[in-house]
Picture 1 (cartoon, rainbow over the protein chains, first blue to last red):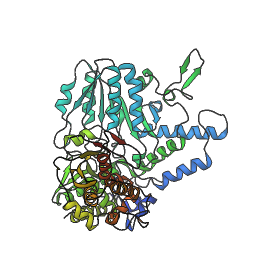
Picture 2 (cartoon, rainbow over the protein chains, first blue to last red):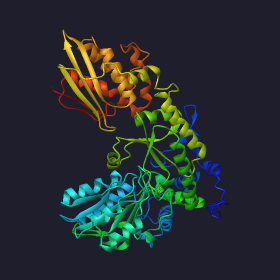
Picture 3 (tube, rainbow over the protein chains, first blue to last red):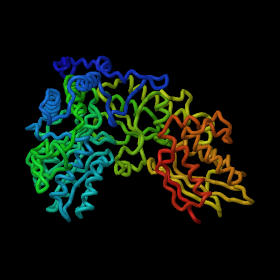
Picture 4 (cartoon, rainbow over the protein chains, first blue to last red):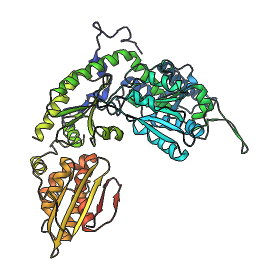
Length: 419
Length: 162
């Protein structure tokens, strides 16, 4: 793929050609009723560019067979492409080795893999697991299941009124019983970017490993797992222009080797007899059964696409959209932005006085505007802000200032309807 | 696109949301139920009195979106003075209309309630319109525990003995 944007750097000379980027996304051209689509639900799932769609079609029409098995041509090509995607992800997050990248069905499965493989082996009765108020349910529920099974205890880091972690409280939670930390990198409900590098360093001073839920971070910024020094990092492909049903778990090889397998089956073994089974080496130990091969290859293609634009340019454009949208929302009387952290991705959760979020969502939809309404699988966050639900506009690099204007006009229309 | 070009938020719905009929608490009800939509936290309390085989009094209150509140308001107005079987017919027809099983063009007893027919194109909002009806059904049948997690009725309603 031509690397047309790589030479551009963010700043005064940057030409971030958003119209050219939008032309890569066939779905952005559809209409909802008679209104052009304004897609602002990117934190739930991002759209797919033609380059990734083409890659899926190319694989399925010329390269498909099952991987890691037969000696025939297609099986070898498919295996090669699948492993190429793994290396692509390894480079994307700057992991030391490709065997530290495990394909999963998504962030949720990645976290469950760590809970099953690490937690069930190493967490014992009375041990403490630290989580934060900002966690998505997918980084809460698996640990609750483990805590219930083992008699372990979950400790929760509070947040302030802006939606930022209370760092001092985090540090105070550590003691000799602390055995694991689960941290969300970027809050899906509020957009808060957590300062995870020092938080990880602090945990390591206490000898405690850290899992980072990067589902909302990897699509929007450069992630370097060696620089962060996290023990585990998880994200999904469909939030960064890839297919659904595929995601990744990065784990330090020493941990992955020490962990027990998550799922038993084919492809994850070295040898099987009814007396004893020997597991395969990582990453295959954790990849039982036939994976979604096309999706994994699409995942790699999505990373190619994002990097052809450049993660720094993506972050710069999205930050500009966030600033503009925040400024425009401040003009609206009766609108409260929920989540006002100093460091945020382009997520705007908001409440309108006297209007239920579901009514907001439906009326915006009548204008072709897609936002998410609900608790965003983050009920502890909703509880903290004393709201049952919020409306959330979440931006991607292909969104424009005129779409921000459409959202603002849509919100004013909602208020007019309920006047 | 299966989108209704006409807004769901028509004047009659907005009016019932602004000035809900029969809103409040009923003293000494003969039937009472609380409906809850766990997906969005909406909660609706419906109380009624049956005298001489007719719904003589009915009242509702709770926290909900405009669609749910308007549906409850119009429902209470529609069933007041009705017999229990007539109310059950309306409940059945309203649920069928909301889930697309009843064509509002066909003969029915819904009258102005067909203003909600557009909801069938918005599966995620069907439960908002249905919750009051589900709760009324629970109250009339003194169901101690109703939990319907099917696609049609993803709401819960529980009769309350006062």
